[in-house]
Image 1 (tube, rainbow, N blue to C red):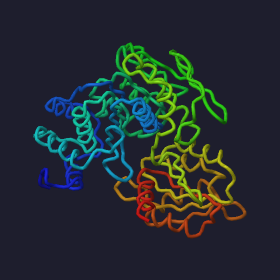
Image 2: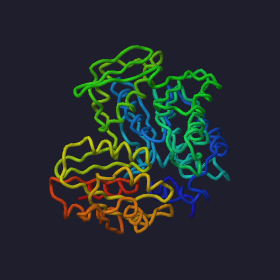
Image 3: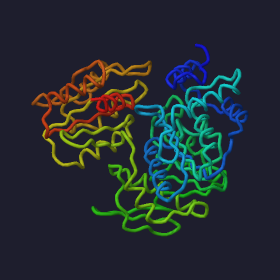
Amino acid sequence: MSVPTLEHSLAEWLAYLETLHPKTIDLGLERVKIVAQRLQISQWQGIKIVVAGTNGKGSTCAMLASIYLAAGYKVGLYTSPHLIRFNERIHINGQEVSDEALIAAFHQIEQVRADISLSYFEYTTLAAFLLFKEAQLDVSILEVGLGGRLDAVNIIDPDCSIVTSVAIDHVEWLGTDREAIGFEKAHIFRSGKPAICSDPEPPQRLLDYAEQIGANLWLFGRDFNYSGDKQQWAFASRIGRKNALAYPALRGANQLLNASAALAAIDALRPYLAVPLQAVREGLLQVNWQGRFQILPGQPTIILDVAHNPHAAATLAHNLQSMSYFPYTYAVIGMLNDKDAVEVINKFKGIVDYWLVADLSGPRARPAEELANLIKATLPADKDGLPTVNVFDNPVSAYEQARSVMDDKDRLLVFGSFLTVSAVLEHIAKS
């Protein structure tokens, strides 16, 4: 494919980026570091916060951005993957960056990378860094794509690092147990800088690495904590207490843990970025993050959640059980073949009555027929023949079928992959 120019569309540029590198995921910092040096973007002004974790990192990033924006700071937010539009990955001051700004950044990278091959993620990470440098931000919030140690985001030196959770996922890249995965994620920590870990049971190798490099480690339960009742919650850290906080706009029991990680980082960075309590309250109330226990307005109740590993599935199942009574629960599910589908399915025993299993596009997709057979083997039908399992060509046809047969008093869950949720969200937005 020929190299696009400034006249080409964003879609054409993104199609080009997909052709540049032989591997979709290629962990390592050598190539991306060289290009970053050529672009002179290894560092830029303002405070930088890097967030890693198996689950909860996107929500934590969103809360940090919302609170700092409410406090009046200029804020950059880089996350991945996107759900509908690529531009969702890069926000400056609460707004998605424009196609034109992205194309200009891509063009700049193309001018200097020469014969260095970059993966799609590496290329887009460099674009985010370029745009953040140009924007002269007060604070940049950067979500790790995969792991930590060898992720492209880790070429910069953060002023504060957060590891939200350590669970089993991406085993072919990160290792098969929490100790190995925790070690990978701990490499976003820096010597002498705040290193926040909100996992209630942090792996020993993460603790050892933090000690070895002399990071300023903040642990959940030791250095910060939260408490709450039905009306409000409170946060406490080494710095002091924040009382009478409204619950975050993001739903689900796990969001207080994510909010605590964000507030611990804000407390740790207080000497550089002062944040009044009112900005914390406003930021938590205003935060928005699609696809994380997202409940659409109206009836029937429709829940969208990108949960795709056992840890996230357990949280989602807990949140579903905390809701009020529904006669029946329908679930549209599509998964990738590198996920532990059996453990994910197991979490929904006795919760889902009707499974609508969808094929996904792409080489990593798990065939719907195979996933349906796993559901039947894992959750055998009861005397009433529930749960039932049906197969569909794509998430949208599964969603449409569910909508056509369910009652307004029932609920519909869409989950299992970013691809599943994004397909349905896009369909809903158009209809």
